[in-house]
Image 1 (cartoon, rainbow, N blue to C red):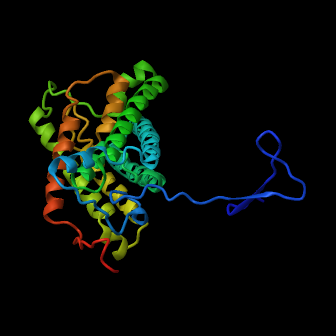
Image 2 (spheres, rainbow, N blue to C red; image 1 turned 135 degrees about the vertical axis):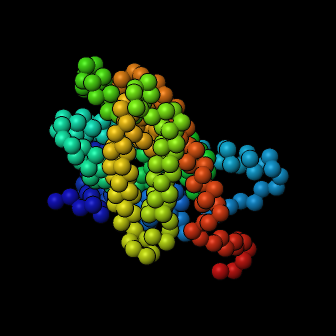
Image 3 (spheres, rainbow, N blue to C red; image 1 turned 90 degrees about the vertical axis):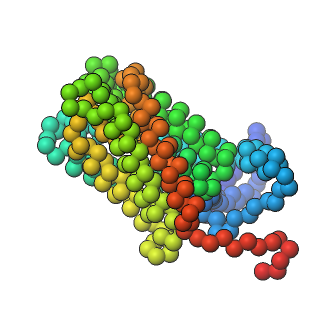
Amino acid sequence: MFSPKAARVDTDDEGLRRRKGSATKVELVKSSGAQFQGSFAAGARHEQWMTKSESGISNKIFQYLFSGWNNKAIWRAAIIEFMGTLSLTYIAAMISVAVLNFESAHLPAFAGVISSVMISLFIYGTAPASGGHLNPMITFTTLLTGLIEFPRAVLYILAQVAGGSLSGGLIRKGLGRAATLKYRGGGCFLDNNRINSVTLGQAFFLEMSFALISIFLAFALGLDPRQATLFSPAVGPALVGLSVGMLIFAAGGLGFPGYSGPSFNPGRCLAYSVARNNWENQWIFWIGPMTAAIIQSIVYRLVPPFRILSTSDNESP
């Protein structure tokens, strides 16, 4: 039986060298994963922040923009964000199609419950490796609040956009043109020309307000360092999933003709737009969440969940 702590490996002359009476012991060391303040994995957050004092505003800007790009761990984490976003948006579209095929009056309830489980599982699955963002809105907010560094934010958002784009192509390929158009690619659509539909202003306000509640709860339940102490480091992703499910239930039950409701995940909306090749009014599903991110960052700066105690390297502990 294979032991995860140690393995015996025989080697030969072509790179794996065999030697009589001896063997090489290989110890498998657990990867530390993505360790940064904006992670949904509470155990992967640094308890102390190390900052470098730079003289001059130009040096500080240079440090902010260019420091960290050579960190291989960030690039590896971005790959996980790509795969996670790809998988999440793809299966979310398929779940949307499956729920619609039930032809039940309780579709919003089904969507809310399933989304709670889905989001929780994806955060649990990706948080140790990447922090479990899987949403450009979350990454942008953690950047504005100073919880992640600039290179990580850029790579994560690019990975999420790429994952959503590829997911859209896979949705189109899997469902075919007719079914994709029938189910609108999975959601995130607004035809404000329909009678009794929402106006663009209403849709923007709904998207922004739902996104703001989503971010507020994500920070309060998943990113607040006090949660791990008061409850448990393991409950954060489940609570975030429940909050998203609650919002999806509310969004799905609005009932405006030609409007799928708030999405509060631009990456998901990108996937569905690519699938149906229709970009009408898609700016709402991006500008709304980004506006909410700015508002949340202001609140976070005004009422941070911790106090910063600054110590110098020269001071004795």
